[in-house]
Image 1: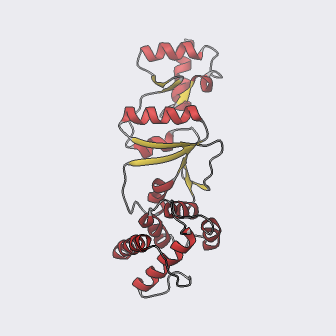
Image 2: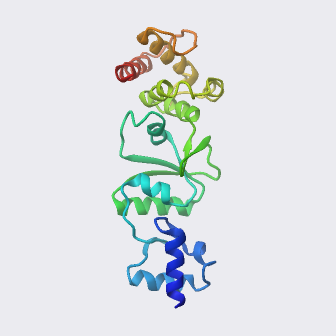
Image 3: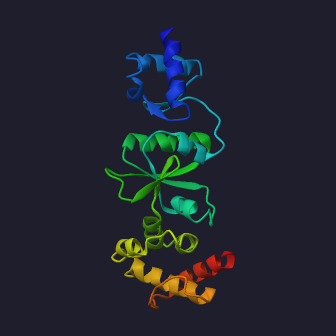
Length: 235
């Protein structure tokens, strides 16, 4: 009787989510024993050391991320795909968490499901984020600055164009002003201004209110020009 009520409580509150023993000990002090018994019956499955889930059908990884109750932030190119309407589709999901054990559980679960999760652990998530439906997602401004810093120029400029009426340019300037493109001395804000100037030129109107600027590094110029072409092509 107690086992069945325990199972019912799990199904009510945690169906579709990862959870660990200590999360459900408040349901019943014999939670560890009950989870072991339920796992033998296939009602719950073990993900890794101390972590479990109740089997359920997911349409895709996005549904799992929305249903899973652990704290995580969608970051980098995965966040970009939300803001720029999946302009560049990828099957890798970048996440940031504040629990080292949860990071491993997410990675182990993703492998079991055939998904590719790249999970970063921090004592405190350093990305600015906002709530989007059931998910915490890196903010557009933070995402643009970080994508530029990691050479993901097309992702960033697609956000800038498609979300141009939503992006706070003053906030973006503050975030990007002192950040540099990885392994270079080029400032992210300089790259953003250059790309925005290119978009204005290619679109034939002043969509972005920025001053024209130049970039010394030829490789960065070429990649930003390529990114601007792709965005304009589908604008």
